[in-house]
Length: 132
Image 1 (spheres, rainbow, N blue to C red):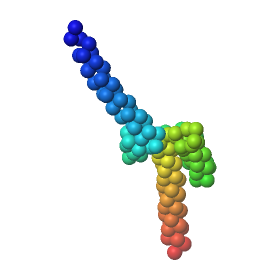
Image 2: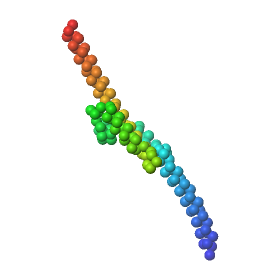
Image 3: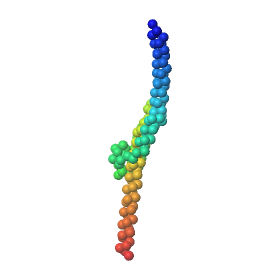
Image 4: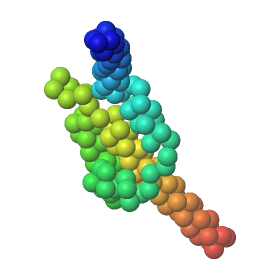
């Protein structure tokens, strides 16, 4: 007979806890959709790691030989497609991966340019030594 008041108290406690858990879940979803919170932190952790050249080629579907303009074009397109819109919350994770891929490929282009320039400088030094 004492189960009636006890059951009522148990239901009230469960309603209170359930409401708090529901609000916390909704807040976490809003933060993830906005790129803050756990999703934003995960995106930052990914940004801290160095991507391999092969992975960067796959992400942007571009190669170092395609040139910087093609890489930039692919970056802008993919970054825009994964950005937040009215219908889609966006994907901070993918945007970070795309930006990292662009950085890796452009760094590789710059590195190749420096190596080419260094080879050219060594060749001109050898040529000037022979002419003297």
